[in-house]
Amino acid sequence: MVIADYRDALFPHYYGLPESQQNIASIIFYTLTRNAQEAVMIFFMLSGFLVGGRAMERIISGTFRPTTYATDRATRIMIPLATSYLLCIPVYLLFGYHIELFSWVGTLLSLQGILVEPPFGVFWSLSYEVWFYIFMGAIGYIIMYRGRPKAIYGITALFVVSLVFTRLDSTYLFMWLIGAAGYFIVGHKSKITMVIALITAALSWSLLDLFLESKVNIGFKTSPAMYSCIKLLFAISFSIFMTQAVQYAPSSRTGRALNNIGTWLAAFSYTLYLTHMPVLRLLSYFGLWRFDRFSTENMLCFIGSILLAIVVAYLMYLPFERNTPKVRRFLKRRIAMLKAG
Image (cartoon, rainbow, N blue to C red):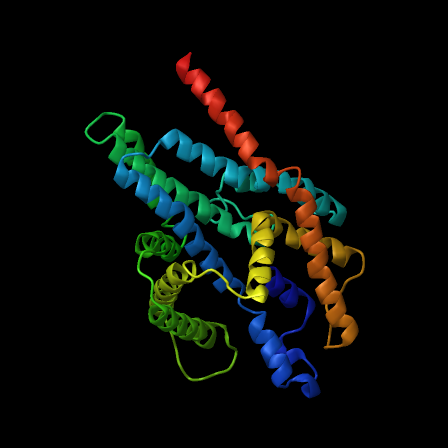
């Protein structure tokens, strides 16, 4: 996501390059760095797998606890989001932008794309994530209190979610649920299944690019319904691939090293997602402008910008997102005390 956003912001579109640079090397570079939307889809499915799947397991086993679930999900979303404003607001003020309180507060309440426009475009996906959580929480609440008056609260929440997804793209909810369903098929282990799923995911990924992202006129008209079907095909195939891939631990030294790097980045990936565009805005303020061609200097600036975004995100992660478990434990103790008192 960060690489795609930075490439899109810093380099011209492919056909904006000098003709001498429109070659196989630039095609590979643009292909590898263009899939920001697909990255969000993968994030939704991973979230469904890790959060939705576990919640469903607890609902089925009767161990689902709405208060615990709500505390875990709220702290996961709100701590990095609220603290990212410490960077986002100064950037707005630096550029002289007008801060619309309704938009900023609405984004904190996950109303972007529903009632407000987010202050930074990348915040659009957060409302989806929160409403996914609310959807699963409502299901768990209804099942936990079925046959009792309290179930009405879960039914009401589910009704609100249904209204919300008249404004948001419900396809993403299905993708999240597909990821959650994958949680229950992890026991099946097959390299053949993994390879077939990977090939299918790659083909559907290519269709998304070919039919809707490419500027080349191929004489093929697609519809929103077809686009949704292709996204769901990608979701199903990638979800199956994901459930297979997690069962194979890297065995080579290089594989283990890459896995360690990925684990490190994953720890603060949410903070990185929230802060990378404000960092890019700061860089533009201090003179980093859109490039007009490939050059060694421009590529070094591109790589350096990404590394700077990672450093800034990590420094913000240390005092805030890293301490989410501590805040979570504190809130749970306080809630337990209130219930006991």
